[in-house]
Image (cartoon, rainbow, N blue to C red; front, side):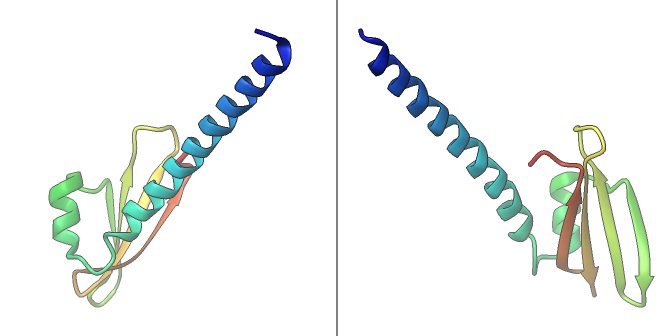
Length: 93
């Protein structure tokens, strides 16, 4: 096998790995988006009790889970028990 073919194969493999890594990040965000419009109780049933709940107003609260990754937190906001948004910080995906 000549070095040109080997270099091309290595470059192709690197592109595939990078693409899969980027897609994994996108799918994680999509999975968070998928919770919008659902009951917060459904998320709690799926993920377990949140690490913190902050009452932001009448019928409006944020629910935060600390994930296994260092400093990774995922927060969902809910109005009248319906998830209206999410954010994440310190998460790799």
